[in-house]
Image (cartoon, rainbow, N blue to C red; front, side, top):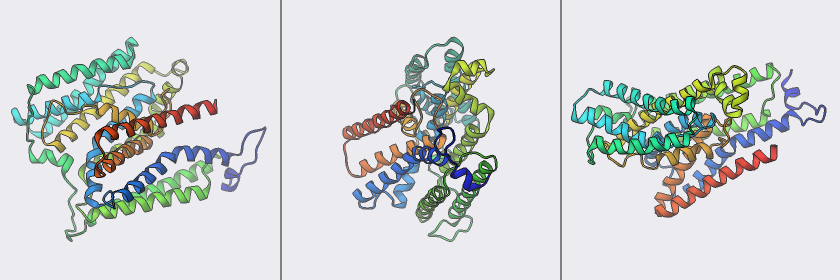
Length: 402
């Protein structure tokens, strides 16, 4: 079928044209991305241009890296129809464990990182076991986990902060990729890598679109595709240029990019990923179709534990110390990011890119309001209202389409 027929297919048997559906679907999908751009421009004006300065952009990435990492894992948990309230406490516990091993016991970095990630996986698996195989509500299990690991963090640190970490470990969060050109003043390596990634994403999107047309699938209108990808590429290129004028791309940004790419492929292309969405959409139907719902639920929590552990290592490396209060209320920011990014409370709906955009919305708001000198009290009020608005929007769309 030609592109014109796909995009402008006539109404058949009372059905709306494919193009109309595509427009509505894409407007909803990219609504939060448009909101992110508007919010950034809003704070750029109110902060007199401070928001998009290279130093502040770099800090914005570093400050929100651990939230984005956890939001990717939380998305799968919420898509499967559950929730994890323990992730903030796991972040603090893993940071404490890393500090005790590296600082107090002088363990090498690599074995410490492996043990910490494995511990996070075991924590997630232990919680997922009760949720998946004994049908105990995830809210109760992870609430208990939140209390348990808060207590264990205090016990592990004896109520004191432990640090500093070795300099090599600190580079996990605060380091930057080296500039192999060494020109000075402008980070050419970061710029070239970034431009290459943007071109790769553009070509991948074009290939995917052509593949959908070849299989007679509904695609977004061509003008929308061009405008969307053009705007995204120009915005990403401009931010990349600004960061290249400072110190280039942070190491943790590379880690996030790899995670986002891997989990986007997993959720969109893999059989297991599609089955997780099926569980959240209708668990009984998924079970009757032969999907091992218990095992997949178990694995989503184990995966969340690993990513929470990674976030704990990144946060500890950035803070350069482990404190008993590390990770407090992180779970609220992570859950808010996923819902703001378009995930449904009922499960079965949500995208990795949406969760990342939701985390960036929260991060830009936090950063912008802090630069403006807005008190933490009003920051919490505004963030709460944004989350409520996102959930109301989700419920409204659900009721409208019902």
